[in-house]
Length: 357
Ligand code: DNO
Image 1 (tube, rainbow, N blue to C red):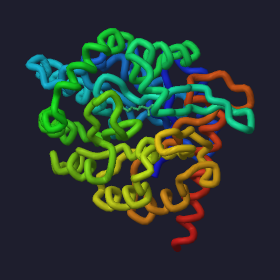
Image 2: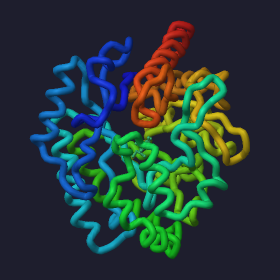
Image 3: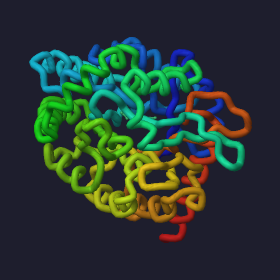
């Protein structure tokens, strides 16, 4: 297992590589080039420069999160082949700089969504909050305004301006599409890119839908164990795998997260794990709590044990942290709470490892 931290290059992060280097047990980062328009090739020189910068700080760059998928691929339009060809070229470039794992998602129109990016908790810290009724009250332009308005001037991954401009029309497009058609579009993409992922030795790791339940009638495909089985059977290659995000899947009370971890880790299909906790106040109302088991609904000990017992040898990162100690940072991606989260998870891992001998 390798513990990494998500970092945003190009001056788009309040956290520095030097700070990350000082978190015990963290060996690398995952990053993305957020200024490259979705669908375009990530230039080799940019990736080489990024790798050099990360390596110079004593950290590895083996994971990319994310190369986003152009909407035309998800829509199944004729133009998708051009974007898939670009994706393959990007994979080739990623392989050349030693990337081993690529996290991506196949969520239509918008990536993750929250109703409040800075919800005050009882202890005076701030966390991201989701209230389904609140979200349903918003129209697309209000959603974009809420999300970007709370981003403190940093880019928000998955909320690129060019994507937002077409949001209303895109939502209508998907509302008219069957979920089966959406699955077919996903399979088309996988069948095209997986042979190249194998060739360049990059494990593809799809991120679950966040939250994993229906919003605005948009298709949701990576939301529970049954859907994940269907996803993995679309293409049997080990290179067709998962980013197992406990907080995203844990937003649905119907998901047994430790059981999901056990099943898919045992199959060797989990390549990357985002481990965080969530605390529900109602079925579809939750806050992204601190990582510790007692702070949320998820039993982190059982979850980390399920990874360990099933021989997980991929990458783990702590996920969204709260804003604590007055930190000003991109929502979810400050330094302090993620550093605490990483070391809590490493502590659990060590105890389970030593206890198993
Ligand atoms: C949010 C993240 C997501 C994730 C993508 C993966 O903070 O968890 O944006 O990176 O869904 O493609």
